[in-house]
Image 1 (cartoon, rainbow, N blue to C red):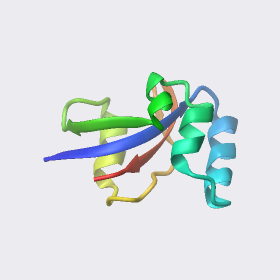
Image 2 (cartoon, rainbow, N blue to C red):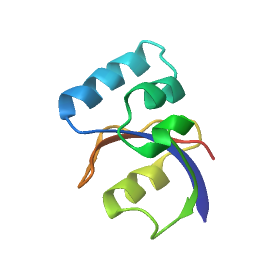
Image 3 (tube, rainbow, N blue to C red):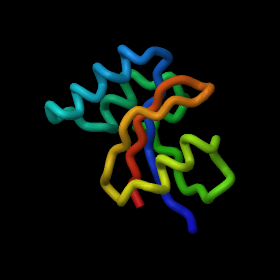
Length: 89
């Protein structure tokens, strides 16, 4: 099984908490990714394209595969920082 997803990556928990607040107030995930994500994918609205199991770090993969299309994860911490993940398909 493969899914597609977008994500936002930041270095600090206070940043990801602020981004969660912005999302809850109606900001577009893609715009926040472009403006704040530390990942090169931010330029593409956070798009990671299609991936299957075993292609991402375990905590990221677990969170992404638990989402339904259109859902946004809670905060996911990896060795890279703090993520919000939005499953797109």
